[in-house]
Image 1 (tube, helix red, strand yellow):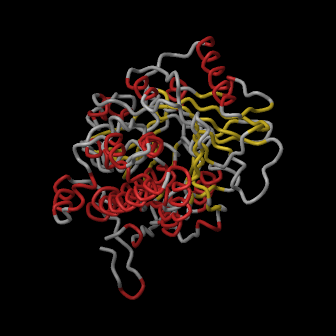
Image 2 (cartoon, one colour):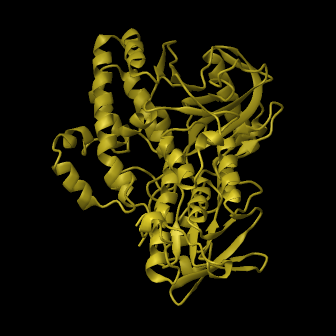
Image 3 (tube, one colour):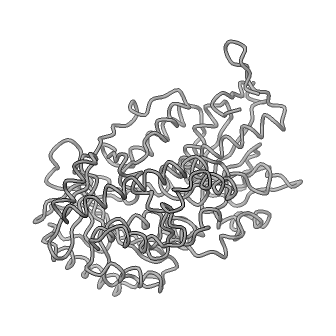
Length: 519
């Protein structure tokens, strides 16, 4: 049975009830899929807006994204909207990017990677020579093979199993060499590319899941294939996607409650039964989805009864975090694409600092020019987001330290012939301790558990938990961090819930047209 063919079309008093805690993309997607199947859904969000880490800060140019900046793997979102009888393109405008990212080094060298792989190959040939072009083509073949090999048994599997993956790899022996199982990402890239700048560039994809290329498994290079398959800008900003998902959920009848603070999850008779709010309200449910960092359950933040869930999150290291600077200004100097990466001359320096728990002294800068790549000329006053890696568990920021760091970043941008008018102020920076306040029990980590180590992917909690009736979604659960992955986790959660409801309750599946049954 699949959830998309199941509906609980019963009178309201007989319909299955679900409560989803957290209106990030995983929570929104869970609510959409469940409501589309006929479940009565209440979606609770502690903030005054939906979207979770897709958030904005105000500026003179309008809301500035202060979280994810682009969309990849758009088929995940097409599938989500189709599950509700809707079309993604009717709700948001997605603009495909011809330039995936612009990369700049302190020596003045610059490289654009393109949506057209032949354009990227030509750019790399001009940048680093024909040998590097050949190496790049081989790298693309390798990451494509890895992505295709891991997609079904890992990302799209509700529960990734080492045995299934091992059998898959053994049946395709060429994958063993492509996985480089005994190598870190950095070591494998050093072998792959003779030009260290290219190894540095593709190593940065480890940071997409909060890791270091010097400690993450080589297989994470497959993230490049996800980006090479297409990057889309959401017209108006990523928050428009969260808004569209929220509107779709509401249209399906989801009861969205903002500023709703959950006190605890009630577990009775070994089964999750209800959600209690700090107002004293009790919301009974047949299924509860927790779309937050699973560490919050293990720590007892939602009640002692949930401490048995994901206990490994209290032991394993956290992913990295970031300092995020969101502001509006007029840029001067270097021409920018939508995505821009300014590398430090020493690729290892920032990761040495991160591993030691220090704010990097010489970080690479990721700059999103949010009004570029929108199929029109940018306005005079543009919106920008600057992201630098930072450790989770960072000490609270002092005004002096933050001011000094801010000045370092401004000077670093100027060294790349880039300045802004007016000069952005430090008051628009979100730091790891602030992220921990926004998303409790994360310790400031933006991607849940650390991706370091070959078995990291198998250590994440999955949609079903040890407590019947309680399910997980979001970037802290399988298949991991990132907007597409969190959205996939919602599919796993919805499938588990609907299968469990039809197999263990009195809520019978609806017969499909033509006599097809969903059972």
